[in-house]
Length: 213
Image 1 (tube, rainbow, N blue to C red):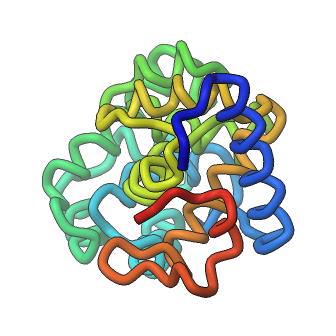
Image 2 (cartoon, one colour):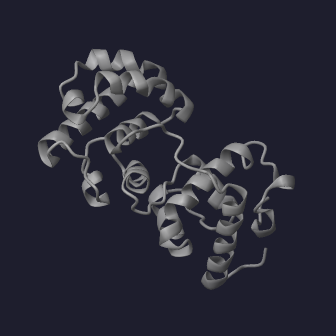
Image 3 (tube, rainbow, N blue to C red):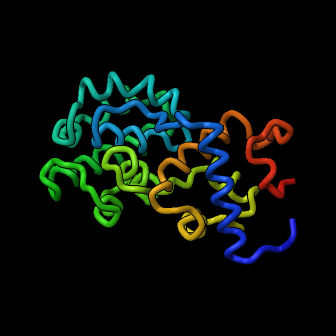
């Protein structure tokens, strides 16, 4: 694909977004949750773990610790036992309890509703904050996980490796109102078509707009 200027890249990005919308109109957050607190905790658990495994673990966790106050006062060993299958369970236990404690002590037990406040919670970075904003509060957010990184690089929409820089590139290319939906669709696309090792380029719905390989 010939070198393109910013305006041309923006037009192509919007074509990609439309193709993804047609291909995956029902793509949504894969983490099961009933409220912002559950989604925040589930997203913390999803680090280096599949959403499927997280969804197997969280029903028991949330039944035992249904809100921030309960989790903030939890016995760490009990939490570790309940989340062990997600991997890195000791560090994740610390993150869960610390984030819950911050919510209780600084936000009156309610998950904050702005990016600036969410990223002040211990264990919460922009990716996690954007998941919560987009799916619990309806605030558009770009969730840069491994699928978003790989696919947007292949599409030529970013050259960066750093998730924050990738997010900023996409913010310039994708209309704000579509950020959350775009994230869901790209992530789903990465799971079912554009895999890391064997991308199915011959059946890819965005192939006409993609310079890869």
